[in-house]
Length: 235
Image 1 (cartoon, rainbow, N blue to C red):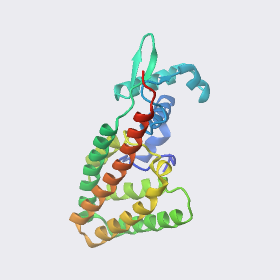
Image 2 (cartoon, rainbow, N blue to C red):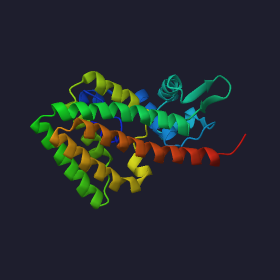
Image 3 (cartoon, helix red, strand yellow):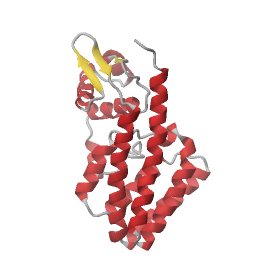
């Protein structure tokens, strides 16, 4: 994988080689998007182009271009006089995003249970084992989790579905386990059930486990964003 900072949710990319061709604008858009989705850039706060350019050692131009990308996604507002204003995401929109991810990932797991090859299943098992070991050691599991779900999504056999997952995943924070370390044990347990369903070819169980896996994540993140909104200064 060319971008180890990815994960855990954007797992629909089909061609890893694209990661090596990312522009400065795309890289900055990823970072700023992540900060907004994680609640680090609060609603109505202002993105200072000069300060952001200095932080990343670049010029104002790619920062502004990145902000225009985020404006198209509805995350910021570009105003002529007031600059770049964060619109942010609400707890409700976060639930909507995760609901989409749950539905799409559930279908991918369902199809994967019907089509997964012995080689792919072996790789899924290996990644699950690595995640369990890393979690027990208190190490970062985000990238391993990304690889785990990506392997399952690839096994579904639908490049169209993988593309849809990638689009939906961009609106979900990548540092989920960093934000919620207490979720790691639950995630490992969910993975255990999912691997078992795939091994048995149980498409119904694979879809159900996957959907619940994402729904639990949605509840945690939406609660965090709701708290952020309540704690934000008025005016």
